[in-house]
Amino acid sequence: MLQINCPWCGLRAEIEFTCGGEGGIVRPTATETLSDAQWGDYVFMRKNPKGLHHEQWRHSSGCGRWFNALRDTVSYKFEAVWKIGEQTPAAAVNHVHTGEFK
Amino acid sequence: MSILNLRGNAEDPAFRNAVLRALKLELPVQPCSSVADHLYRLVWVGPDDWFVVGPKDQASAIEATLRGELAGTHHAVTDVSGGYTVLHLSGRPVREVLAQGCPLDLHPRVFKPGSSAGSLFFKASMWLWQTDVAPTYEVLVRSSFMGYFWLMLERSTQECGLVTRRFQ
Ligand SMILES: [Zn+2]
Image (cartoon, rainbow over all chains, first blue to last red; front, side):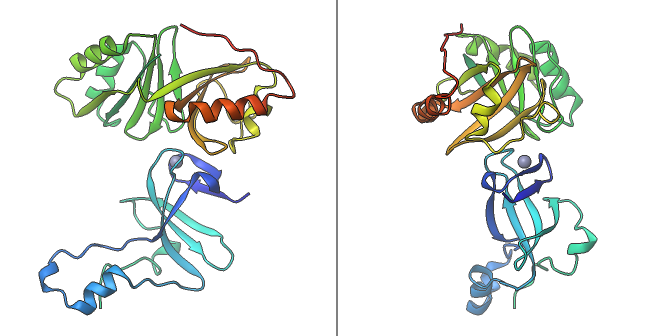
């Protein structure tokens, strides 16, 4: 059974967790200035990489917290986990969402 | 049982001290921990989230005491006695019984009196903590899942037998 490291509770079974898709997507503030293409990018477009992916996960059956994860979509290996608001670990810096929309 | 949900800022000493004055128990702020005395259980369920379990028909009194002491601090106290129920599970085979439906490592090296965890028993969410080395566990389950939980408990105890007792 795959174990995931919750930043609060430590190593727990995968069935206690929910994946919330790509992480770090920031809701645009000045929405009235967005073009349709920018809205589309925010709402629908996701990276879907083969390899390292910044994701948000929730320890839904445990502490209930959302947290950040850097996961390899090929090997399923979790390279890093960190709390919401915590500094991005070095391993993940080049993979986190910048909050910019095209 | 009287079951209350307590929310507040674990880093605020005023909040922690108010809980200590109300329940005479130190608020468990370490993840996955719990404290217990002859009256109350205080269970960590998240970094700003606890369950307070007390004797039957005491929920209003506990709520009033907590609210009195917590006045002026950022907090929330909610009586959830109607939504949850607590089971005491004890006996030698209880780890094997729980292991059939729960992914937690309950080996005494890892999980001991004072530990707590939110997890699953088959498909039902539960919050589990240990109160002594017998071992005795207490399991908090949503009332709406109790029928399911009990059915799975009966199945999981077929090899070792299940004796039921009612607590006050
Ligand atoms: Zn957790």
